[in-house]
Length: 466
Image 1 (cartoon, rainbow, N blue to C red):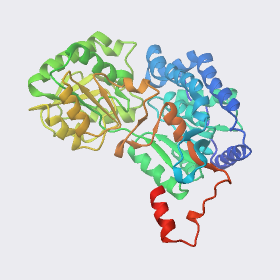
Image 2 (cartoon, rainbow, N blue to C red):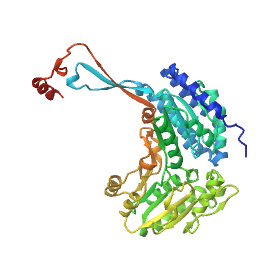
Image 3 (cartoon, rainbow, N blue to C red):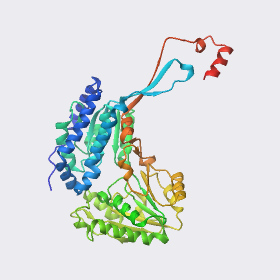
Image 4 (cartoon, helix red, strand yellow):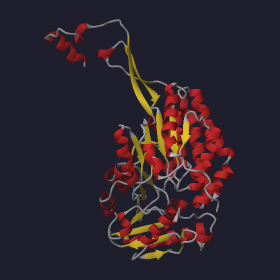
């Protein structure tokens, strides 16, 4: 395995980099639409011209297959650029609204203006997508950006550090390499927005630091995303989609189904169907499959193995610490007492919890913090409506898993402990913009009703107009 040869950014240089970007923003370097379009095209060029290098880095970090690397990382970001280029002219146009009678003659509209210099802190599980997708939104909105990729995915972080200066206008962008110390120094700086993808513990640190500068934040976190499976479903397709969404990236996905809720009378059929699909996708020995990933590091590997102690493992559980391999694993819990139910799994372990009746699933979901995603497999419209109306989550996938992520017209973000704020498509553009309101009036017809001295007559007229 290749070694990371990129040095961490010297702490003393971080404030200087931020100041340089702030100076670039003040002189208006990022405001022109032409500049934004050119930078967006350069992000796409970087990915296309270096696709083999990105595929290799993702394989070294997470053993992602070329197809998975393209689907969830490289191609995902290229598609995001294309969508942004297609719509950016419209997003930047004034957004006209009506003007009430009492303010006539006038016109009212809002303008999207860039926030300034923003900080993007990426995550290791999708180290290309979760750095570049928010960067695309920041560029489209006209911002300067400091980019902090996760040092845990060291090969991808090193590649980004090497390539970005050859493609982007480095008067307006800066990649910071490092870990806790470097991130801590970054958080001491005054940014106009902080965008973070990761876990709850670090999110609290970021919010505390942001509060010192009254900096707004977008937090894309995670949580235990439930998957409710009704017996009224297409079992074969359901099993395929659960296995695809759960074991992509070896389960290291913030919106992967974390646990399944199913009636106990239907559980054995579902488990059998899932087993068959695992073997159809990854073979009898997933360790030999070129399409099955690995755990990012030994810290997370040991954490996941620890979850399996004293649990009822009904499938899988094979492991190889040397290669950080943990097979697709199913744990059956007949009651809500499994220790795995207490934290987000973030790995290739699927917990199945059985219920007496399907309606009990709603109570289980509502007994936990609001998840980033909720999945429901059913052919019953009444049950579908019941789940939608009685639960809260960042996103909902009905009869499929994670596919909503591929629709740029759908905002993506959490609620409660699973995050705050959204991005993707125009929502991401808005996140990195200030929507400035404007009312323009003429000097004609300056009615004196609003000016003192006041009278009952003026008041009676105002009540009719307002």
